[in-house]
Image 1 (cartoon, one colour):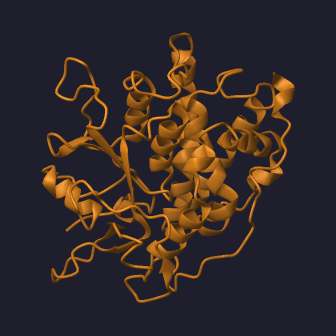
Image 2 (cartoon, rainbow, N blue to C red):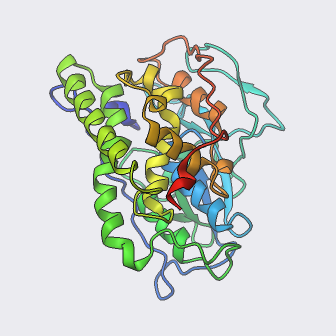
Amino acid sequence: MGKTALDEMGSKGEFQRTDSTFRNTISKDGEFPPAAHRYHLYVAYACPWANRALAVVHMKGLQDIIGISVVHPTWAPTRPDVEGDVHRGWQFVDPAEVSTVTTAQQCGSFSTEDCVPDTVENCKFVRDLYDIAGDTSRKYTVPILWDKQKRTMVNNESAEIIRFLNSDFNEWAQNPSLDLYPEPLRKTIDEINVWTYEINNGVYKCGFATTQEAYDTAEKDLFAVLDRAEEHLSTRRYLAGSAITEADIRLFVTLVRFDEVYVVYFKTNRKCIREYPALFNYTKDVFQYPGVQASVHMPHIKMHYFTSHEKLNAYAVIPRGPGIDFAGPHDRERFV
C-alpha cells in the first residue's frame, strides 16, 4: 500500500519528510539527453514543489517542447478495487469527460476545470506512473519528469528538475538568456536554499504535527526563519541580489500559499505574510515576473489542501478568503 506525507511522522509527533527517490540527470552524454518533445512533466497546480517546476517551464518558455499534465487537486483512492488499500493520492481527470469529483468520504463536489489528463501513459493515478517505473518507495509525488521514449521516470526531485529546465533545454527555450542559477551566484544561492527550505518544509511541520510539543517547536522555528527572510529582503530586491534566481522561485511558492492556506490549515497564524512589508511586496513582485503567474492557480491550491486530508478537514469545506490580489502594486522597484 502507498503512503503520503501524513505517514512520515517521528516518535514525538513531528513531521519528517523523506527524500525523493528518482534522481537521474539530464545530460548530453547520459541516458537521458536533452531533446525537444521527448520529456513530459506531471504536476499539480496545488503542490508547491511542483509549482517550482511549472514556474520555470513558463519563465524559460519551454511549454512547447515539454508536455504537461495537471492532476486534479483533490486526492482520491488510488486502488479503489483493492481491499485494505486505503491510499489517497493524485488522480488524472479529463474535464471533457468529467465535470466534478468528490472526496473519498463523498463530501462536496469539486470542479475539474484546468486539469490536463495523462496523454502519454493514459494513467488514472500518479501512482500508476510509479508502478510503470518500478518504484519501491511507495510515495507517489509530483513533480515528475518523464521520458516518453524510455517510458520511465527521470527525476521526481523538484530542486533538481528546475535546474535541468533552467540550463539543459536552452536550445529550444523561448527565453534562453534567463539563467536562474548563474555561476557567480551559485554558492550564495545554495546557502540561501538551505535556510529558506526551513520555510518550505516548516509550514508542513506545523500542519502535520500530532503533538503540542512538535507543533510548538515547528512554529517557533518557522517564524524565526520568516523574520530572517523579512530582514534579508528589506535591503535587496531578490534573495541573491538584484536578479531573480531559483532561490526566489523556491521561496515564493510557499509565500504565495501562506495567507490563503497555511495560516488556517497549518495553524501558522502568528503572523500573515501581509503583515511582513518586505515579504508581502516581494511575493507580489515575483508573482508578476513574466511566466510566474501562469503557474499559480489559487482555486486548485485551496481545493487540494482543504479537500484531500480527511484527518485535518473531514468535511472538505473550503474557506472563501482572504482573496489576495498578488497582481497589485508593490514597492520592489526601489531596489533597482
